Length: 293
Image (tube, rainbow, N blue to C red; front, side, top):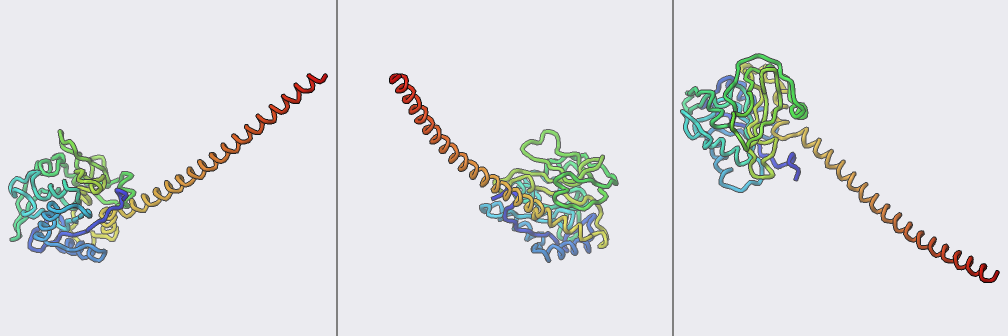
């Protein structure tokens, strides 16, 4: 199985009881409903927790991808709502080789509760939980895509919360850029290298659309299509299939050439033997003439 063609089980988190921040509740609901139309299952905070917990207990048969339509993490997905650590359920789920797609404001800038409250956290939490640099400026800059972002056919947006990359001293974690500006990285994938084949460069914590999604008109079809492409790796799968076909064709050509070369070599060997016999006969006749002369 290609690393770009794994079995994907897609979910979208949406829970009216819990708060959001830069993503308006109306927009969050629209995201959830739009993704449901293309095969995602809508899950609330409790269901999201149960999915993550089950993923830790069971053998990996498919990659689970959860898109967060609200940019405030529920308290039941972290180990300490006041100061979450890498032991949080959310991070252990990522370590297992599954994926989360995050939009809106800085990940883990807030923790939410089922009564609608939200608690602000320090930017350092993204380092403790996700291994990211806590240095996150507030800017406005159109993004430009890397080759990977371009292959995933992401739309262009005005980014506002770029990251600098991984925090100093972090190891065993991959950081793959999708969209950039002169201020930093606006979209990326942090890979925690879970169990193969699901721990690969396009799985992990996937950051997209670092902007305010506070009006329904902001949520274009291109925005939704970008999410779907990232979750299912649609363009990458097509490219990989084309490369696989090309490789198979080259292999068949190589086998054909090897067969023809083997046949030609056998024929040349036979021809060499015949020439040897002719030379020997000619040599014998020459000796016979000399003897008779």
